[in-house]
Length: 113
Image 1 (spheres, rainbow, N blue to C red):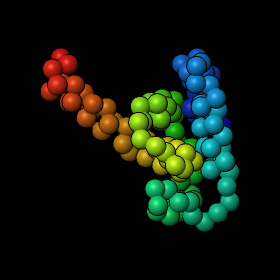
Image 2 (cartoon, rainbow, N blue to C red):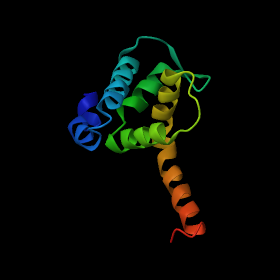
Image 3 (cartoon, one colour):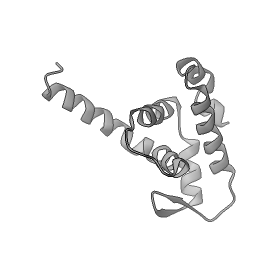
Image 4 (cartoon, helix red, strand yellow):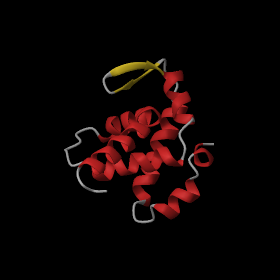
C-alpha cells in the first residue's frame, strides 16, 4: 500500500543515485504505519498514533520528493536522523506548498527573475 501511495517505481527512476535513502524512508514509513502504540513522538510532541498513521498513509510521491530535497539541502548536523525524517514526513503535507512559495518569493526578490 505504501509503495503504491508514494509511486515507488516513479521515485526509483527519479532518485537512482539516492535509492538507499529512498528505501530507508520507505522502511520508516512502513515501520511507523504498522506500529501498535497509543502515541508517536514527532518534533518533541506526542501525537495520537492514528493521526500519524493517517497522515503517513496519505503521503504521495510529491511529499517524498520534498523530503528528499530537504534531506539533501540540509547543511546542519542531524543528531537523530530517525526523528528528523519522522518530523519532515509528518509535516510535509502541511508545509510543502508554503516552502515552495517562500523559495519562489526569495528567488524573485533576489534578482533570480
